[in-house]
Length: 163
Image (cartoon, rainbow, N blue to C red; front, side):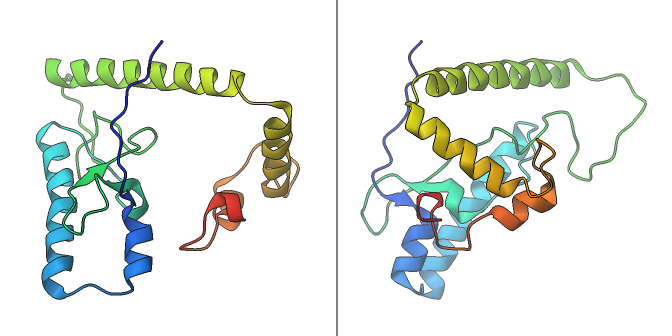
């Protein structure tokens, strides 16, 4: 299996925002317009993305006017939900069923890709991940609750590798 991805040499938008310190109203408007265009295009395709944030936007290049690319749709949306979160007793439209099948296929691809990554970790990396998990699993239940996850997330502007 080959996973082909686009190189986004400009890094994360959040890192650029922190490094830059401030944006003019014109520059901020341009960035926000690109971000909202992503959400709009998702909605046109019947996909509701519920976790838009600067660290998930990558810059295509290091240029000041580099276009943004959005990443990581993995756990953020369900293609069969409406924007208001409401549901109905009407039978699902064929387009919705098609999107559900596509969503399931993407999750299968993601799981296979994660399996390949995990199988190629060295013992030291595995031990480091286990220790990180144990430090976040404060009640020693073997699972990380939402509260534990929020408490274990790094503060804005820091990286997991630094925490």
